[in-house]
Amino acid sequence: KAGVTQTPRYLIKTRGQQVTLSCSPISGHRSVSWYQQTPGQGLQFLFEYFSETQRNKGNFPGRFSGRQFSNSRSEMNVSTLELGDSALYLCASSFGSSGDYGYTFGSGTRLTVV
Amino acid sequence: DQQVKQNSPSLSVQEGRISILNCDYTNSMFDYFLWYKKYPAEGPTFLISISSIKDKNEDGRFTVFLNKSAKHLSLHIVPSQPGDSAVYFCAAILTGGGNKLTFGTGTQLKVEL
Image (cartoon, rainbow over all chains, first blue to last red):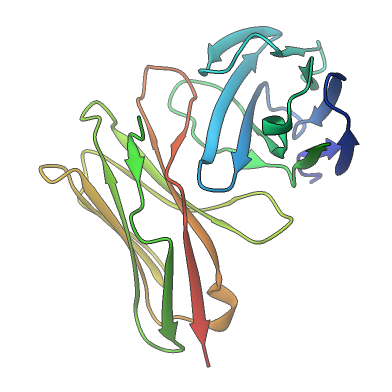
């Protein structure tokens, strides 16, 4: 079966711009979570969407937002980019039901802010 | 505040020997733990997990041990193979608190011939 697909794989943006990243989950998965990976910080939870609703949110500023569509695909948006936003952004999908921790991660989008 | 810590950023072992990766956590409410392996330019891949009601879980060459009183878990890989060279992350979940993984900062394992 197809895995979690993230597009684009690489992105270079300028400070102050905004960016939208996309994640297509495994078919049948209704939960999509987003994580930011930076050197020394590990993976930090951004937010989780389930059935088009944000179910959980991490400690990131309001510049980071997301949404989920009826087909479970999710997008993440970062506005007014800062140099510190340079990171690998990963999404993970799962069925999302209680007790299900079978997360599958995509390969990520490498964002570089210059 | 880093609630899940992997204090060894790197570990080097010889092929065939045991690799032991350690992880400590501070939040006693965590009740489910997972280990992931990550190669460069790829997303993390699930390895093995353990519920807080157990103290050991085994899957082939991989065994995870959980010591709740010490808030410590470890991943044992026996025997270690060159293909095991990757970054290993432990992660914790507070079940009932949503599907949010709290990750450690990772340990780079290098298995040498």
